[in-house]
Length: 245
Image (cartoon, rainbow, N blue to C red; front, side, top):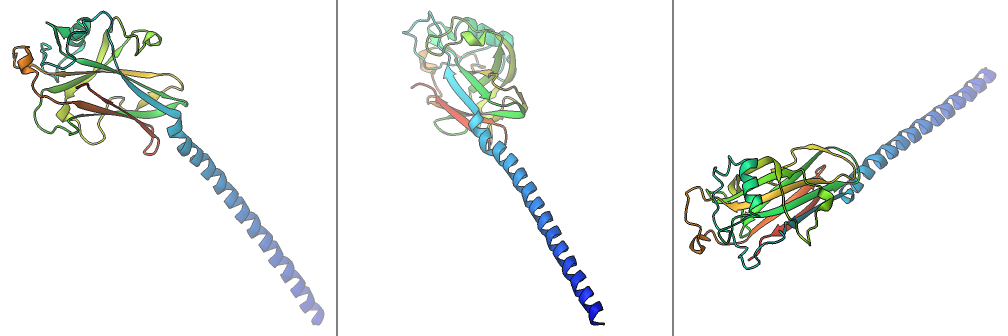
């Protein structure tokens, strides 16, 4: 009987030891897998923002009259702010935004780039006047357009001789913007190391056909803009810009 008890104790000890080894092995495997998963996800989330860049530069035109004030006067584009297209924008670009000795629009170049392919990304545009979001009817208007020009030839310091819009992708008044801003890239893909370029045209809509004189420089103030390049809620970079006095 004692012999049987000894065998039982022996097999019991072996069974417990086997179970402990199995538990340790399973636990180690679980934590190893968890650590690997966390490392992969953490690396992507942590490094994502550092791999995104965005910049905004004001387009400088060559061969323009330096005596013309950069302050905006109301400009008539032939259509309301929410209706203008490539034809209207190109007429303004052909004149380099100057007509009759006055400046009718400003043009900004927005460039975003990522060091990795992104299946979905957003570029948000927020525009304010005197540091405030406009909520009521306003002449302050904008249009986003693309160009087929050779982007490698663009130089923000020396200026450009011409621009030609191939597509107007967004147009509206400042009071249409809310929250983080208008998504001008609309969750499209981004190719690794390939620049995404949009142009922003800002103007005061002259839908009422007012006289374009210095007396209607009206709606005085500075406008400011913020563009946010976003791949996730944490992978974001921002750039800001401001109009002249």
